[in-house]
Amino acid sequence: MDADTIRHLIETGLPGARADVRGDDGVHFEATVVAAQFAGKLPLARHRLVYATLGDRMGGEIHALSLKTVTPEEAGI
Image (cartoon, rainbow, N blue to C red; front, side):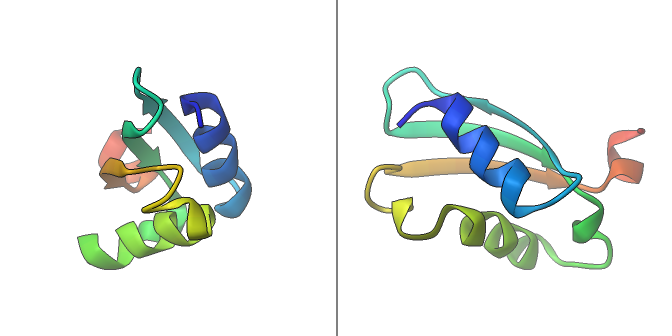
């Protein structure tokens, strides 16, 4: 697994989202995800939306994913 693949999965699963994913060891990653779908949602609900785009890869191919989830307004976009 690599950061670009995770970025693609997130952006495909959350249309219109922008994801910046980093990780050098192939199992631990950090991502900042900006998506309008996060509006009005608490952090846990936002994280669940992102995890849903990754499916069974979480806990398997992706051992850990640290998330920062913001709306475009929160990101100043």
